[in-house]
Structure formats: structure tokens, C-alpha cells
Image (tube, rainbow, N blue to C red):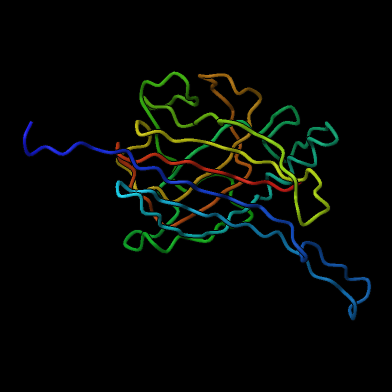
Length: 225
């Protein structure tokens, strides 16, 4: 039909790193020779529009206290009754939110804190897609992971220390929202339609992305072991 332009899907690739670099732990035995180390994370967002142009934004992510406490219980297979995640849970779901930036300032995301226990405002992903999970209030709120794979860390003797978690949010999901936060969640099943419970492991905030049916999001989330 004349005058009507075809919609072309746009893909955004999000790379998320959780790095343990040269300043992760502090040795306070000797204050003169102490070395300070801290977890460092980074998210890269690539936007590919209909003309093939790429836009890049960067933002850090954070493995929360509850996620690190769960790791301890998981390693020893001992339940920590002070936290909600159980030792038999595993990283298996992905969620999105629109509460990661102040109202009126969508390009200046809030900084996550270690004590957070969820996304600030998790949004529904789809109403009828049975491949999703966490159905409540008429919609699904959790998306499955595409894949998890080991990668070598070139900076550490090419050891297999990196987990690459990939999730694709299609043109049919999460439309009509200004997305600015995402999280990885643990659960005791990754089966479609799982009802939970779901517990957040890691969280990232980023400048708001307007999600519609011409845009696909691809998240690459790197976790360092």
C-alpha cells in the first residue's frame, strides 16, 4: 500500500561483565603493604537501527549480597535460614524493570546497592507466551536464558573462569516500557511456566531504552568465577 513504510526490527546487544580485578579484597594485616580489591562490573549496550548504525552506552552491574550469600550456601549445600534462596536453586531466569532511573531523568540511572533484594519495578514481559515463567496479575514476568557457556579469561592464564549468560528479548516481549534495569534470578527449575519462588542474584541499571515491536534486545551477562 502506497505511503506505508515497512517496520524493520532493531537489535540491541547488551554485554554485562562482573569482573574481579586487581582490587577485589583488602588485606589489612599490614597497612603499609595492603592491597585493595573490589568487584568491578560493566555493561555495554549496542543499538543497531534500521540504517545499521550502532550506538554504545556503558553501565556497571552488581552481584547483590543475597546473591553472594546464596553462593556460599550453594557451595557447601547448606541452607542459610537467613536468606530466601535455597542451596538447590540455580541461575535460571531473567527479568526486566523500569524503576532503575528517576522519573524525569531517564538517561541517568540510579546506582544499585548491595542490600537490594529485587528490581525496583519489575515489568510484565507478555500475557500469553507459555515459554515464560512467573505468571501473576495476568502476565509473565520472567524470561528463560538462551544459553550459559564457559569462556576463558585471557588475563588469568586462559583459565575457564567466565560464565557467559545470553538472553534475547524478542520484538514481542516487554513492549511499551522504558527499560532501565535488569536482573538474573535463581529458582529450583528452569521449566516453562515455573511459578517460583524466584530470587535475584545480580542487578544492572542503564540509561532507559524505549522497547517496542521494532526492537530486539540481546543481553550478554558475564559472571567471573
